Image 1 (cartoon, rainbow, N blue to C red):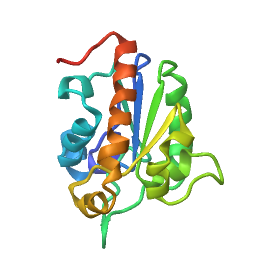
Image 2: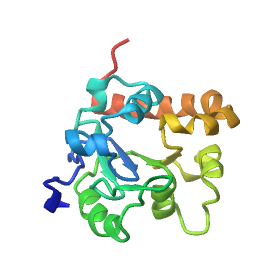
Image 3: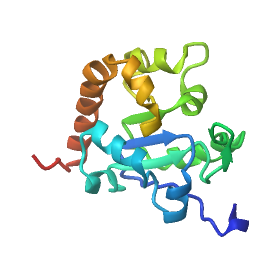
Image 4: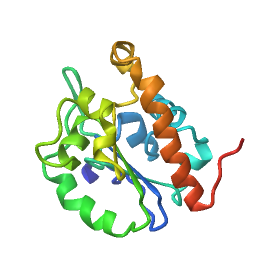
Length: 182
């Protein structure tokens, strides 16, 4: 995608405690050069219970898409990430981040790639049964405003999953020595 003048969009630091693995940057994030720089990012920050400053801190968060470039638009949303991209680039980057203690797998592409073979059901099953993948992996639905129907059909997400997610994030943040503003 360098032919479009784009740089690969990811954030990785040896100090990161939480890795956020999603599909690929959206068009707005690709244009700004800032991962999750859109409405989905604002919703994700809310779900995690952190401040924008904490979310943007490389000592806390690493951001790896299943592709590091916006894949373009398709008929029903963004195109999928390129095949083989994550398999090539994630292992060497994750190896450089030994302090990661929580990996958020956002959306189906990340879950299919990372969850143990034969143990993943539907995205909804994975999110509902997130504990079976712990303590490292935490599957989530994409925080897109377009997922409001999914959230309406699955009210347990807000009452059961988000509090546990926030507790796990808080633990990782505490281990970094960076506590959220109260």
